[in-house]
Length: 366
Image (cartoon, rainbow, N blue to C red; front, side, top):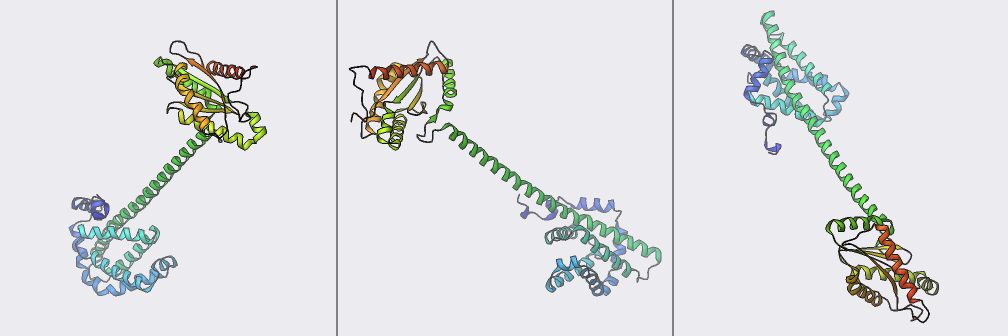
């Protein structure tokens, strides 16, 4: 339940039984009540003087005067103090009385009255009331008992005031703690997001957006391990752009970068979600294709890739491509598989440059 829907008594779980228990702890009983009620007429007669004297003493202290602040506030405080003094001698010290004391603790905390100032005020009021009670016609013994009864009741009140005061402090600490924890969680999330971004950046080739060579072996090793457990084939494509140096020399590096990006986009376009595409540096690229064989890649993937590359360039661009398969019966490590694919690429490149063999397509040929 929201605490704004509960009284302070309910929030602190203070019942009539608890109130009586607290009174018993202070040995505050019916005789004390009778003694205080008997002094009510005397107190009422001296009430204005008591309140005036109390606030003269209080406002002489700069810290308290600063807290009070203005005449209107002082008037309200005088009125509240009159009610409190009358309550002390009313004889009614049940739930309503206790709830009012709890509220005082809450108010003192909210306006910033430090415990030392509150206790100083209690001491001043007790001294004034004790002095006033000396005017009673009761004997010395009865006067002493009445003063003790008043001390017990004020001690009872102080414990209630400080319960809400301390509770407010604890609540502030819990709120501050929750805010700190929320801030820490927020910062952790930002750090986690930033770390993921940095990890992604560290894996990504800035020109093409493909993964870079740095994580090629690690990724291929993981794919091979999974394929071996499932007894599946894995095929690796290794390729480069034919005559890429001539393209850069004749048409400039900007055109060379455009071709690299077009090849990367073609790879993304024809690859499945589970395929992983890499730029290995310069004009070399690699694709890891899980659960695929060389034959299926030659029949489906490579024709689509060459077509996509050709379609994305206004001048002919050709690729030298090597394939290597691992599994589903025999497996090798990542380095060995990449080496075989790399060798296949260079065999194709050499074949296209043999005497009498025309290069498939280059910008120069266009």
